[in-house]
Length: 95
Image (cartoon, rainbow, N blue to C red; front, side, top):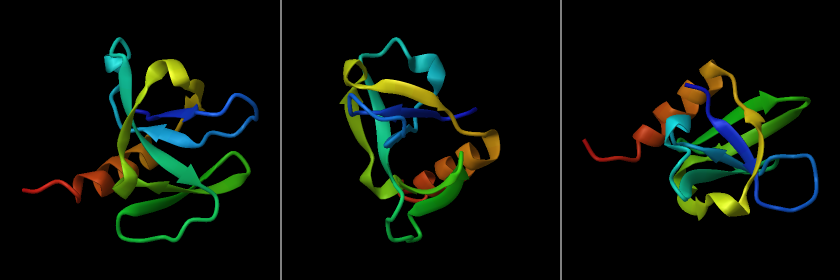
């Protein structure tokens, strides 16, 4: 599964959110997203990765739902990065 990238701002060409939801659930009105930052502290619940010509940090500890209407699709991550983000998120969930 390749996670989708989104932007919640009207202008610009950079994503600021990554979806942790399977793309097959795209019919739902909301999507679970984590913020992306270029300069965020790396913790055990955050993932640092490269996309395009930039370094990003996905803050898995700040997951939240957002209405799909408010988002602009910005592409997808590769499968390896997607797996790493999902594994990191799953650490938050109780056993």
